[in-house]
Length: 383
Image (cartoon, rainbow, N blue to C red):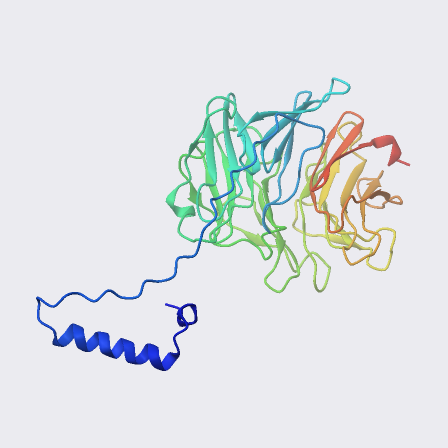
């Protein structure tokens, strides 16, 4: 009870409590009960209804729903599927003038999804529970199949969900509290592969090597905020910490790798103001440091090899948000990541705009930022 709501001083409140205690202890069972002063009732406003998800969008909303939120994209055939705060949207890339249509999980803030025929397992952004939603009808209806292991902590978050490149039943998920897990039955059961994620879970990435899926990686930062990548070469049985071999001293981060299409031992990974490359599946690394090159410094979040010319690599990321003129940068290499051309700058629509994902379709790149999706012709970048 807050005494100031009743105009009662602390001394009066004390004596009143003593008086009530004496009456309670000394009176007979037939004494009338003296009612206590009720707590003041604070008027409550009804919970606002969730806004209805629009059926069509000109631009999907990529706003992150929390610190560990990073909604993804997928290209299936000629369609671009986009996870948003209001569900799953899709656009026909082969049809000029098409818009994004709501196709499933209406009103659900989605991080990512994986597909097995008409079955979709969606990763919902949430805290503590309700992460994994299974649908058998392309997201029109769904059930929560989140296991108890992910519901033990009120602040638990599952940042990432990925699928095996050939066995669609095999999945990986990352847990903020408990590390990397694997399912071999499309999310029904899970086994723990590691007991923690590396460093900042906001930038931590997990995945399979696309052509050697017995190689599993978890990239990010170490506990002292230096770049780190943890790699298993035996399908998750043992793990190798390659943080010391990256060659970049001090504060940094290792983001999502790209794998050379014809030389699978060659990886390219963007970092904070630098680029990491390896030619032996991550056993040893070289680094290109661009912190002193204002034109090429950025938070290089995503790398992608060209789908036609494997010598071409793209990097995308935002400039340091402390810079007054914030830009999203796209940088291109035509020699497999050994050197880089002058970046193309895209104006950010708002300050502190995050880049959520990078994909390609034919002659275009698709960059998913919080403010929407940028479509960029590859010919504007390749020089």
